[in-house]
Length: 608
Image 1 (cartoon, rainbow, N blue to C red):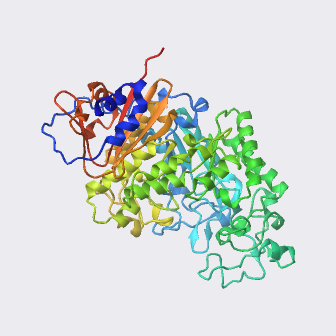
Image 2: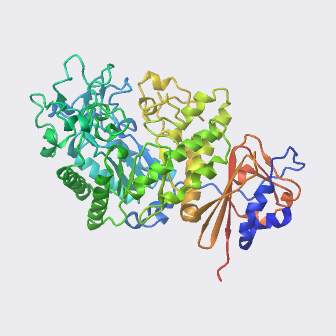
Image 3: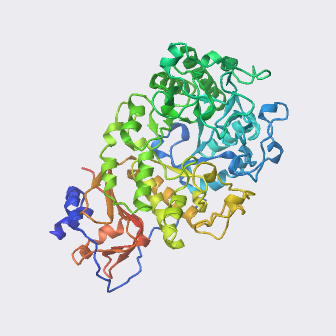
């Protein structure tokens, strides 16, 4: 039985038989008798010969050809210290600089990103996603708007980051390197300017520990006349731009959200002014705001914040209008994806189908990777996840354009979860598990999204502030006391090390991903494994090529039995990734796969 099943790996016409092959496989305690160096290892990539230049021009490129890098500009690199204090003329956007505090500006800016484009390009990045860069209220409560999610002015860049001209220069230079730029945008709320006479007093400022500050008023209460009286404090009447955003009537004004039921849509998100996106004037106004941003800066797409806190009817009008405008401006492949904070594919897919947003960040994928590699849950869970991929399929969305990630600026870093839950793991095994998480992120269906700093072994302290460390030399004590993975550095050092094992691993992942179209466009199908097997195997097929991705999720090597050792040498010669994690017999047959590693075999089917 094994002989016929083995042939299915190397004979594409018998590929369907792989299901039977895997079902018969099981871990073995057999030891290898002969160890022979694998002479079929892929050659190391030359970072000076970037694959970006071999990809289609950025304007013509499909989203599936991208490797994303998600970055908080304020925490990346300080290219222009003169803007550290923000605006020199607008008080509300001035100050907030304190590099010792996790909640304040640290000095990173757009010029710093410009300076580091070669670092990103050589890693294999093809698209840079920036946290919001529009002008914010610099300080609210006991923290600052370094993250960009407290917008005041939707027409200009935050002065802590540079100016409009600097942003245009950055985008132009990125485009010259065939790298796309994506803006993070907000339509749900603005900075907190509006107050309620019934509950906002000087002794209860925004972000007070006494929560909720202003108890939510339901739609039923508002309809019966039980509502708040909104007002704008004297001197703040014209803080927002465009001017129509200064009118309290375009906000819900119903008090604080608890993220449950209707107040998830109509309540103030942590006290921020919740925009009334049911209002036709607001819908048109938001379309105009972001159409103008596209016209002026020519970004390649948007990531939309807090999608599920906005009524779905808004997205049905906003997203198609924005994409149409971008196309009219000469950006034919302008792409939009949203943040829907949920691990349920039914909830996520609701916004790509009913909501008409082409893609979302795949929180469900992130949860499964964490369950597998942090909590040691069985690999079969991925079958359940991927079996729901059909939910995303409609006229402009599908599962293969979901945004895969393992870390972000809200929930924290994968390495943090690993270090927190598995503190007894050796440094070597932590590194192996972080690498394996990135391999799953790259080679599963979807678009890989690298979170800045992960390539330098950042761990963080979890949550939002704790996962927003500095790549430049940090002065923040709570960052600098963390042990990083794969290096003796701390965040007190400059962390742009291109020799870091994770940087080099991601460079290799990007190289393989961009070189083999089947890994980007291939239709994915899970291969069933026997109960208790540590293997996760799936097949991807595109045109005349099929790739088998074999993942050993156990720390122990997976030893093949005698019949599996007779695997034809053609398969070994077609290992496109992970050859160093395999062992071959003297006659060049596959013998084992190392623990916590991935092997990819790609096979060409002859044309008829």
